[in-house]
Length: 217
Image (cartoon, helix red, strand yellow):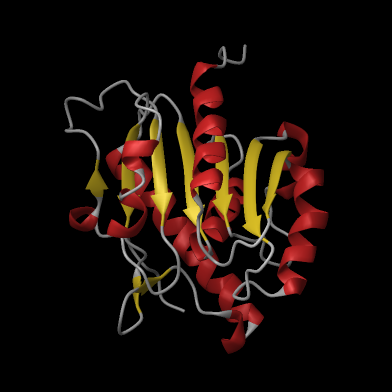
């Protein structure tokens, strides 16, 4: 697979360059077949402390954009694609926000999987992750052991009637996350593959706690 790149011009920002100087950064990662405008609509409900950047996934699907191929096309293709997309996001951070006070991640579905992949690649670089209807991809990563030592905070929310994420992916994530993160797992009765008002409120509270917590010495 060839390398991919985040389109700097497609990024939606909640603040101007001057207004985001010295502030923490919250990176939004949309789901499969979607775009950067999807999660950006959540910004009015999120804490004001961070500057928010909503990225467009690098691969055009014909309708929207994707971070990596679906597992139906082959698990190895998914993992390889996620690896390339992870590199692309980190390269984007190096270009655009190398001096951010901290970097947090919030993703939905495939974007939630990407939030975990970024933590697995560079656990020291990211303060936390919010994975809404997301999942952990199979296999081992170079940063997994270090992530298990650091135990970064992770919010994982999902619905009981989500028919998009396979049960095997949910079970794998349930087994994997507690060993690698300080996990806040929330399950929402009757919720499908979407984000409810209650889940959004819980995620916002999780974020608010991250931005009011004292810095780690």
